[in-house]
Amino acid sequence: MKADLAAGLRQLPGPQGERFATLLRHGTMQVEVYAPQDQDPQQPHEQDELYFVQSGQGEFLNGGQRHRFAPGDVFFVPAGQVHRFEHFSKDFVTWVVFYGPKGGEQTGNPA
Image (tube, rainbow, N blue to C red; front, side):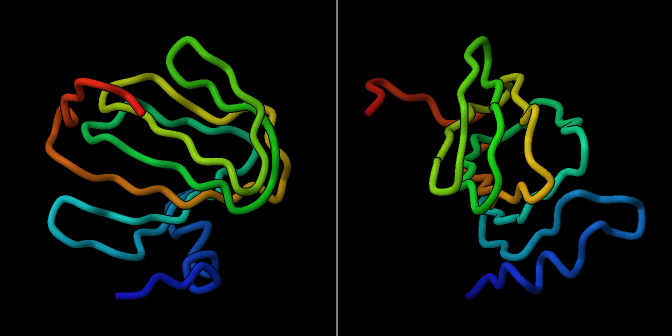
């Protein structure tokens, strides 16, 4: 399997104004490209997720913590946690990977 960022971005915005395009699926794993415009209306998701920032900069609210981001940054968000990108540049694009069971994986020791 292969995901092509350029092909994903050509799908955005979608016919209903979608800010994301799903590019790969396998089992519980789903890979999307996400490129919100002006605001990020995300709600908590049922699965754990990873964000790999491709381009742009701004702030990421993850639970009660706020982080500056730039290309190359990676964020983990556990299932059910409030999160969103804020104050981001017009060129902001991120990969999103959803995985695992609904409710997220339970961890003992964070890395």
